[in-house]
Amino acid sequence: MTRDSAASLRTRDSINSGKSSAAPADVATAVLTEAEYELFAELGRPRRVEAGQLLFRRGELGTTMFVIARGVVDLDFGDDLVGKRLGPSEFFGELGLLIGDHVRSADAVAASDGLLIELRHEEFQRLVDRDPGLVSFFLRRAILRVVLNEQSLIRRLRRRNEELQSALDSLYAATHQLNQTEELVRTDELTRLYNRRGLTLHLQEHRERRVHRSMGLLLVDCDRFKQVNDDHGHLIGDRVLQGVANILRSVAGPEDFACRLGGDEFCLLVVTDQREEVMRFGDFIVSTAQNLMQMSHGTPLMCPLSIGACLIDPTHDWNDGYAHADAALYQAKRLGGNRVHWHDMELTSA
Ligand SMILES: Nc1nc2c(ncn2[C@@H]2O[C@H](COP(=O)(O)OP(=O)(O)OP(=O)(O)O)[C@@H](O)[C@H]2O)c(=O)[nH]1
Image (cartoon, rainbow, N blue to C red; front, top):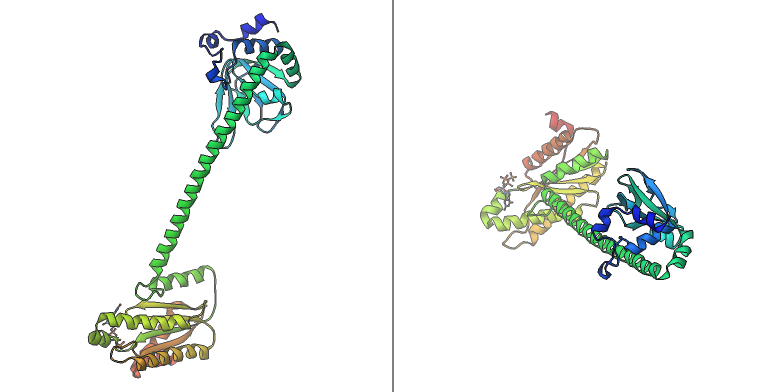
């Protein structure tokens, strides 16, 4: 291509807009100086492109640099990186020319019909031979542009990383808060045992996970607790309730479940299918309360406890099991309290 035809490739607009001469300040610009453009146009090959035509893909090896004579080209760097639109006199794919076999970092697509000038790696030496000064200036700009692009990419990635980190931190905080709230919703404030809602959720989780295990149920109720409040005040009453919770907490294994149902009523679920074992739990709780009562002088640390106990059949309705334990508790109270009573079927049918 001659110098005359090269000049004719350039649109008048781009010349008039002053893009053609790179001032020292925009040394990293993608716009070629007039002299560079003319040199590349002279040694390169013109190539017509149509709107939407793919020039190269990200990840492909390339050995060609392109200069836009007419039209516009979009560069898409993928992920969520900002793309670029290049116009007349701008160049792209320069590392292919300089290095040869360079991995493209973007998809290049003609965004309009246009005309490009292609320069292959093999032509690099010819460019140098023709005008070493001009090519060295171009090289400086091309390298600077790559470095600036890299730096801006690093900055963007760093910012993005910080944003992601802070989003992750907020997510952790929200999850933590949610867990805490969920835990609070399930917890009795006074005793820190599970509350009735906690029990309902516990049973629901078991049903959902299809955990079918036999369990012993102990319904624990304070005897004449109202009297404690009346005689010693609510604060002492609270302390007694906390004492009952401590006994239940101390006997419950990791798979067992202790909760305060409300007021002076508690329950303990123990994983077993043995009546004797459930009764052992019950006896231990009642006798521990008795021992604590003996240790109190004046201000009560504890009150007597009544317990209704039964085995829960995992294949039966929970409410049936609960009703059995409740009936047994009623019997324990009727017999004077301060004891464990085992549920027997006659009780419920009576
Ligand atoms: N201190 C305190 N008292 C509570 C709390 N919740 C409920 N109570 C009281 O517990 C008492 C329970 O009374 P009752 O249901 O008659 O039970 P009780 O006096 O133990 O009677 P029996 O069970 O028949 O032996 C009531 O006076 C309630 O006000 C609490 O959180 N703290």
